[in-house]
Length: 487
Image (cartoon, rainbow, N blue to C red):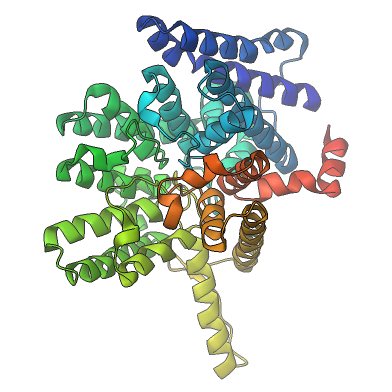
């Protein structure tokens, strides 16, 4: 029963995922682009080919539960299969003749990293751009969360999948059924996407570009239809709209739901939300003041600084100015944000603010314990005593994160990439940031690097999107022993 349920869900996921390609396929057919239409049709056929397997697998009984290990296996398998299938249109189109390039682009899209191996995106057909933008949008909220929302057979067992894919150390569902939670998350996500697309359209983008950039912004991805990214539109209105919605996308969607319910106090006392409201304006303010000292007008300095800080903190990766030309203090103010990330439960990548909040509170407790050895101290989160295991979880996550960061740096350096660029490349792939410093502003390093480096960075991007443990556990014998025991 359990093995059949796992196979059934993977097949269902591939079927649903393949059907999303019908939109770029329809666009390619409408525009008479036979090459792209063929690429999408073959890719869809490959994903749907496994659907007949459902006829030979027994449907799970109502209320079937997946355990934690099975949830991790399903999410990891879904993401790997999704990224491989998502790479097929790129590869079959002929625009990316090396599969390592197509896979990198696909992984970068679905993990909402936004790093690209395409030196000139403006030569690409619109159906190609639509699939790139959709990859950000689908991966932002979570391709497995979408499956959970659409497949009622999961019952309460879907919460194991939700936990394995949702970002942050603490997960919760705000409706009795996990499918209800997933549907609410996607409805909020869709609503903001529609509003943003309309605002971009009103600001001067054509409707197609407005839609693609709305996908990228809400997914905190960063893929653009222009080589110059958002800067190509030269519109302060678009800059500010994009910056505001990047901030929204980097906020915890559970808290957004609470705001929509009118439960403002839950948001006001939330420890992570309070830290988010402090980190972004402080870093942007420092950068803006530094720019003003270089004779940049106050309005422009504030716009450039706030946009760049929001883009890096939320790991979106859009660009409106070359921050390599900024004063060192301004660079430092936004560079440090690459090590942070926005809120848990958002579409952004990175370590997440809540983990730093937890460790900062624990450091304070250790200082107090030095003065008062007999005192009892706990980590207060949202003005409530927190569990001690959350501290261990945050500390362990950050240690593993930096170990992987060093490994990624060594991988890039092994290909002859200079150390500064290697650190930046590792940071923006593991943190799903997409925008770095030095040569990483243009992303040239990725399409110049050897194939094995792109494969390694693809793995780092998936590790970062699934918050390390979901993928790392696949390499441990005890995990597979547990899986064999359950199925």
